[in-house]
Amino acid sequence: MSSTGRPEGAMHMKWLLVIVLLSCALLSPGYSAGNQAPFTPTDPAIQEFVRLVNAKRRSLGCAELKWDSRVAAIAFDHSADMVSRHFFSHTNPDKKGPPERLQESKLGFLQRQKTLHRRAKTAQQAFDAWLRSPGHRRNMLDNRFTRHGVGRVGDRWTHVLIRP
Image 1 (cartoon, rainbow, N blue to C red):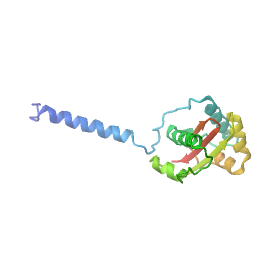
Image 2 (image 1 turned 90 degrees about the vertical axis):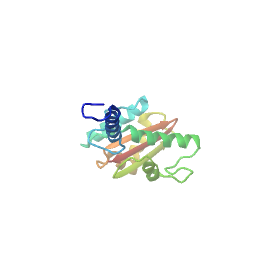
Image 3 (image 1 turned 180 degrees about the vertical axis):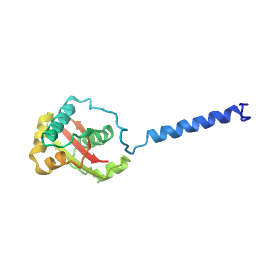
Image 4 (image 1 turned 60 degrees about the vertical axis):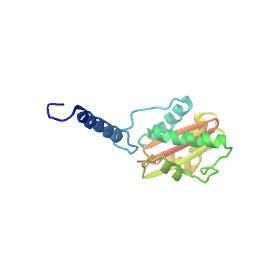
């Protein structure tokens, strides 16, 4: 018995419940002001692409995009899917497009955009190709987007931008 007259096990259960609830709150998929620790991709080509995009945005007075590992995982999965199932499209053979994939991820966002490229061997090639395309350029430089992630598998690049 504890000094309060309650069994010791009941006190441990309360603390366990508190820890579980705090863990759930801290690991929630929603966004808060600082729940994304500074993180950079491990793929050197993607690191270079992120550097190029943010340098271009800064040169135009735009805020840098923040790397989001959850968004990058969605981008990577789509690039891997395109390679493994031999297609190149925003919509996969199961008819799932960007909205469905982002909803399945439970990632909260107000706006989203996705760009695809194939046959780029380097970050510079992917960046230049997207910059030459008016729609892709507009997406990369749009100040409404604040977070992004890039996935690359072989020559398939996927860039997902969101505004939480």
